[in-house]
Image (spheres, one colour):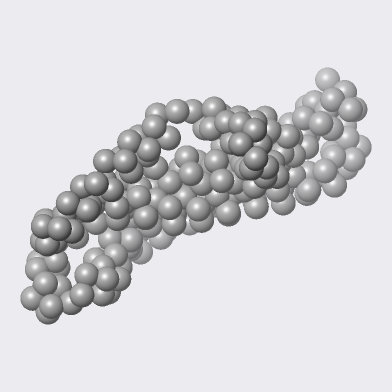
Length: 226
């Protein structure tokens, strides 16, 4: 077997197209998972000091949210991709393949970032909650000015790990016709009967993206724990 640099040169235009799609799925999927995970965490968080009426409302919301997030977390991402891509059009909702993939990834990983947020919220010292209550801060002000800044600061490194996990799951979008990096490599290989060069380029690309991201997360973690 010989290495064909000509195949690499021919594949590069397709690679850049796939890289752009992969980065779009990564960034948008991560943003959805972070935002929706925080919403899930807030809805599931117990509020022992809330009025009794509010506690009953939280209980009514908490159980459906818990069931939905548990179902999403316990089913494979691939099944969710197929469901959104093939079933939603039967209900009259048709989205592009990339939009469907981004939503599926964001929704799936939001159930994991939710647990990270919950751990961060629960790690906030009780004295901080008591101080917010002693200052008679409105609940929204207490959350935005006291609780969430401390909680999110603690969980940023863990959230970053899920960015890398999302990156490694973006090739699944190929199953719903999204031409990410791996999709472009597969299509090129089938058309030119050259598999080694494009697949090697894709593997190296994932390493070049993941390793610097991991080092950045470690540096960020060391900075935040000072």
